[in-house]
Structure formats: structure tokens, C-alpha cells
Length: 397
Image (cartoon, rainbow, N blue to C red; front, side, top):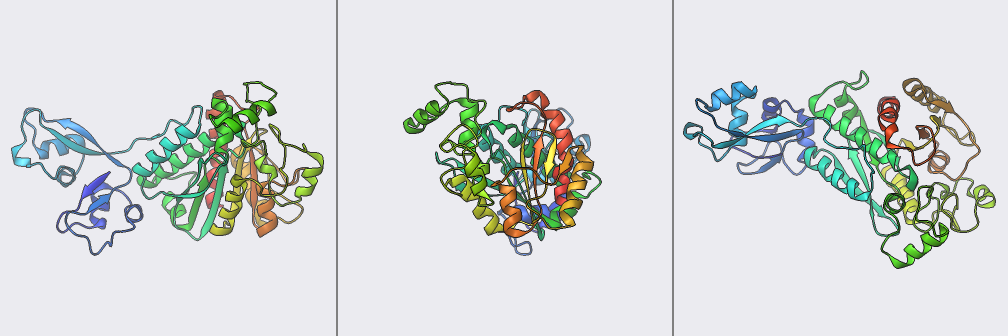
């Protein structure tokens, strides 16, 4: 919500008046010099919206403020063109209110159209969240990263590396929504202060690594003639793409990283396929390149990759995972979720594998839910209940 600065206002005053933490208002307005604001400037206030109210008989600003439990000066602030001594029956004024939770409806078929709309909602409502475009898919869909916090520790979480694991995007977006809401209300999360997490940790989340694959699974082949023909051929003419894990070129993005890639090349498909094909070489696909470059540019301290399914989490790679911190985090993840922590699996060339090998820092693959991919939306609430503890623990542990 935007408001107009008045003479004598300050960000500190807005924080006290509206009960929004100062650090969030400051970070929502990085271009504003807190000690040098001018009347007429526009300021973004996170976590606040305004309801329209029709004036009734006997109303005054004082009566309306008392009736709605808001400071009277908040009414003045949100109604700059209204003379409080001249409000009449059926006039409309704005009453500031806290944004309710949840803002997003994430329990849905979560394709790129939904993602774009929901990212905009998050940024408009919680403008302390920042968006960085880290690359594009084969079809030119943006691969966006949402950043929350300004702490030294940098935690990266990603979702939908595989098209038919699209439910993980909804789970991650629900988590971002819950975290942002808790920050504006300063309500504890798993016993932790969200503002302390915000100050100590920077969360860098990529909600959809493979947008083309997700859209293919949910909506069918693209309009692009070349890739429409390709995916139909690879899928043996079937219009059912529910088993599709690859990107639009038939490359499995989580077999694309230079971490014992040669092993996967020898035992996986030798040509494009709906799943498991590791490509002609590591990092041949723009989506995989974007993820590798993001790790290099933003210097992540740990990585959490959300996949489905199995109710397990994997935390080791060839003995290169840092000890004992990786084990301690894995044990905490296991404790808060009930998922089984497994150190080693017979799998290579994944993003988590490459990150551990490249940086010797903690990396985790979380297999959400259980069943056959794509998991049904009927599991969504249970999955979120099980894994929200992992997502918050990734910030504080």
C-alpha cells in the first residue's frame, strides 16, 4: 500500500503508527533516505491494505477510528484529500487494515500463469521482497528468484526442477507467503522470531526452475511448432504428459550438473526423453546454467532442493559434504518433519550434488510427499504441514 508523506513524517513514525517493523518499511523503500523525506513523496507500507468504508449517521473520524480500532492519525494518513470536519452520509473513506493470511491460493494447478500473478501479489503486498531474474527457459519463460532478508547467511531453496513435480512450487510459494506475513505481524515461527531470521539470513528462493516442463505437464504442448512436434514425438504421440520430468527439449535438468555426470551419462537414456536424459554434456540447458550461475553469483551458504516423492531427504555426496554441520541440519530436518534423513543414494549430477562438490557446503534434496508423480492436490495440506518445519529450519539452523 502506498501513502503520501506529510510534513514531519518519518519511517519510524509510520512503523509506530501502523505497527509494522521499521526494518521492513525501510527495505520496502530502498530509494528513500529516512532522514531526508519530503512532503509529497510516495512510501510503500508492507502488509497493509485499505478497506473502503461508507460514512454512517453520527460518524466522525474519531468515531470511525474507535469503531475499527485504528489510530485516528492513520485515517488522516490514508485519506489525504478528505477534510475530517466535512464528511457526510455515504461518503467513502479508506480504513487501513492488516493483510490477512493467506494472501495466495497455492493449492492449485500451479503453472507459470499462476506463478507470475502470485509473484506480483507478493511484491505488491510485501515490497521488502525483491525479485531478481536469473535466466530464461528454452521457451523464454523467466526464471525468477525472490529474495527476503538481509542477513549474512544465504539460504537458497528451489522447486519444480522437474515438470511433473509442480506441486513443489505451490508449497514453496505458500511458505514465502507465510514468512512474509509473519514478518509484518512479528509472530513467532517454530518458536523463532521472524525478524531475527530476517536480520540474520537472506533467503533466495527460485519457485520454478523448469517453467516449460511445468506448463507442458499441466497444459499440454506449447504453440511453438518445433517443440510441440518434439515433445509429441518423445511422448510417443500421447497427449498425457503427467510422467514428463524433463525440460521442453527432453533433458532432465537435475541430471545436468558436473558432479560425476559421466556416471549418469553411461546408464541413462542416450537421447532426449520424457525423463532421465542428462544431455550431451553438463550444463547444456539454459535452466541448468541459470541455476549454476546463481550459486556462483550469490554465494549460497546452503541449498535446499524440493522434489517429490518419498518422504525422505538426502544430504551427502561422495564424502564431500561438510561435517558435522550437514549432519546436524539433516537431523533437525528429520526431527521437524518425520522424513527419513539419508546420507548417500546412488544418484549423481544433481544440483545438490554439484553444490556440495563445488563449495563443500551443506546441500539437501527433499522428497516431498509419497505416491506417484504428479502427486495429487489432495496431499497438499499434509505435505505443507510436514515440510514447513524443514523450510523454516533451513533459515535458523
